[in-house]
Image (cartoon, rainbow, N blue to C red):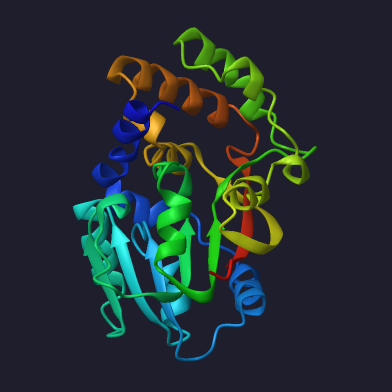
Length: 268
């Protein structure tokens, strides 16, 4: 992805902040249990969360009592996050791009990036994350993406014909997608930076059911669909409705994959 395309698409999420908060899936509880185990965070630990969105990953950590500073690019997303996190006075949400955010000399026990790492400038993200970590601090990265296990719903393969019709098909090298166990983790990038060590990862796959309208709501939170030309989007959504509603059970089954990546800052 080019820098210009990344910057254009990452700004689209802010247009759908309320919908994003309503329809995006929650991360598995087990992920946060594993995060606590892998990072050995103390009760008084301080956390910096990059790109908190509406607070999907923030809330389970706030409920555990941690002090959290959130840096969120989108004004609307940050506003929803502040509303969701209002009961937790130890959580603060700042609106800023992470790349240019000034920590004011503060350092943190954990830097967390949930479903946002790919949107941060790759020339900046590892170095700045390391810079704001305390000695021995941990970096945790996880996302929430589409998973394609062997029993994936055939809808997602059949609908590719429509994407091809409108010129929005996946690149040849990205389709068909890999099995969840074959999706790469973050080890290569973090170790190549020479800034992190003791890499560990965990994987989580789960499934959710969607009616046609529920799935279209979800699609309206994806950057590519938000940025799509209106005529193309309307044609795509019409076909999505037709294909799902023609089923005996008019729902589809979508699998989700989260990969938790944890590494420790290399000693100076």
